[in-house]
Image (cartoon, rainbow, N blue to C red; front, top):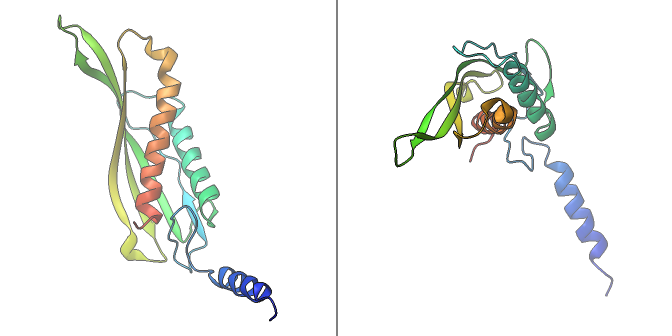
Length: 168
């Protein structure tokens, strides 16, 4: 009896190469006729403006689509287009101590996103995404702001990515 190993390997490779549809190992479900995505710069319309937030959010979102999908990130018209704006960036008291002093503060960032899927118009949407991080009121906000913003932006990008191309 001859070994069937070469045949099994051939079948597995053939199946993997033949599955050129819209699946990726990140869970993204991209229509087969979609090849490009554009992510416009998110203008900052929040009442408090972090000068780096707009560029960070835009760059991180572009990077996420570039690294986790087979889509080419382009400027201008594309098969999928993301536009949006930053609508909120604020800190508020999140918790009080026993003697009514603020013990925790909260940084909140909200973005309004419009996703146009020209390859599958039914998948298009407009939605506001909000994320926040609590931090000790004893900390100097400016010393932890970049870290908090990085964490929140990562979650916002994941939210937009999942809503756009992950169909769980």
